Length: 219
Image 1 (tube, rainbow, N blue to C red):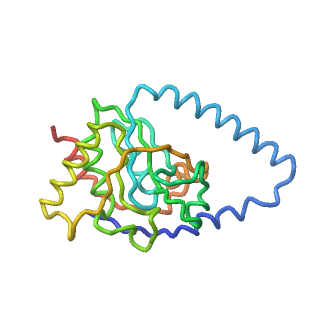
Image 2 (cartoon, rainbow, N blue to C red):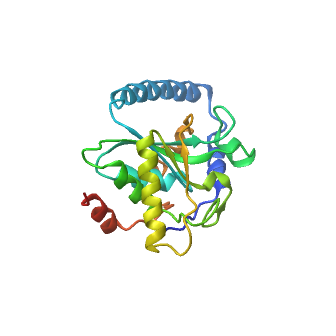
């Protein structure tokens, strides 16, 4: 089942307007909270180092992150940018400055529960991999479909799954998903992290949970 997105890039930027005009005390408290959160995140991420990484781009990263985070075996999911030419880009940079980055979700996963092959298969049913630089109404190379592999083994698996799906005729059109060696991952701003969980009225992707269960039960 393929999905259409209902989110446009500029809308999230406009969410920031409600944060201006804070008093000095409020800003100080917010800065202290951000520092505490950053320290906690650093500790959490250090505990995740033993798990392998998988990185996917499938349009708006909000919905991709939300759905992958619910998969058994996924230990962490965070959104960010990869594949561009600008170091440490902001969300606005990626939207408006043609940096070449894709919106990505980077996972840490337990291969004893969910294999890389299973994650790749789930990725393909989470979005429409046949539209070039587009997901639904979202247009631009930041919304391209891409798999950023971390090892030769991941590359081989991703290419095999893509070829099998193309041959199966599951999609109405050829799969245009690029399979590219992973580069630097630039974490997106904090308000993007777990955005759907924080804002449950919004939804970027629709997935068939029964199909996911079927994939996870495969050998």
